[in-house]
Image (cartoon, rainbow, N blue to C red; front, side, top):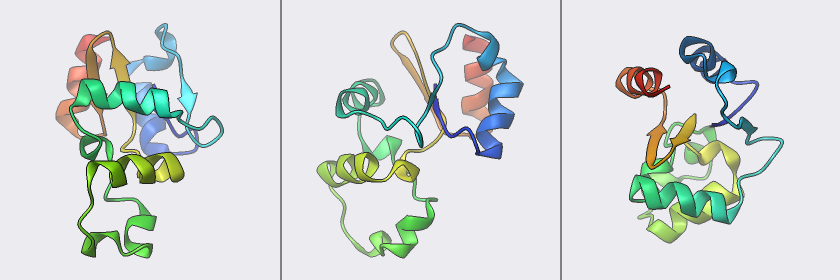
Length: 113
């Protein structure tokens, strides 16, 4: 599970799903940066870097990215450059990936765990 330890949403999801009690590797992306290899693995399962990119990140507005046409290379670069651009949490279970915190995703994750 790729998450932020100080994010209350991530903490709630971990508690709701019992993810911390499972044999998941927990990676706080603020203290242990995502590697290019990890991000490429996520993309392989998710289908695109855009699917992993958070437009809710404060820096999305600060950097005026909403007015730019972003490519897959841009999404990859921004996620690797700034951890807050990764939609959180991201959980990989086998060949399945669960991205973000919407209710459907969390319900599916809970069932999968």
